[in-house]
Length: 260
Image (tube, rainbow, N blue to C red):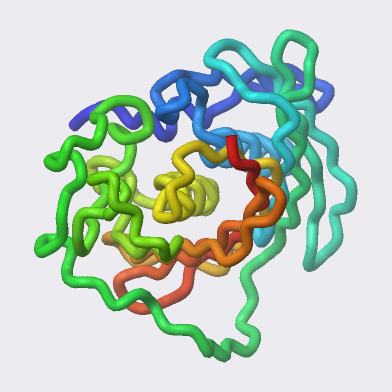
């Protein structure tokens, strides 16, 4: 079995006084040559939860202040509240003395309260009947080597023919079928190409992202729905839903991004 790069690359080492050492790697780089924002989110969320000794994460909100780079970093964590049902903390990622990202997260025990689902998962063919974009010319390094993708059909933008509808539905999983934990769900809401590529915008960078983590998925693939409905003055939103193979919504997010 190959090395568990997800576990290795999101791990941080406590130094004391709420500071943890994190090595940001280039194994999660996007085509822009920078570490993926979802990877940064996962590493920060994992480090904060471990430092606080917190329960499962419910929601995390991250702002990206500067592009991260591969190399050493420091997580500066702080527990803001440690209640019985909700624990809240914050963490910054610093590189070369500069704050790169700031995250606030809520944690808590999973309860047995009411569940009432009004949404429906993407209607996709089985993963084995879908297209592997790595066989269609998609790069095979960086983030694309860390995640397996399957699409119902080849996207229009890949052939220079954007569909005009910034909606994408696909299957995703960590490479080698690795078990998904909550930080991995936070990563996977931001792990695929932005849907604005279907309106001819090929470079977008996240400014802020909030993710809701509902439950852990059953083993298998995650059906993913990505949509953008508003592009205003060079900025746009992007919504994501992740559904497991049993039809459960496991995570959802909204991000605010800038066109480059």
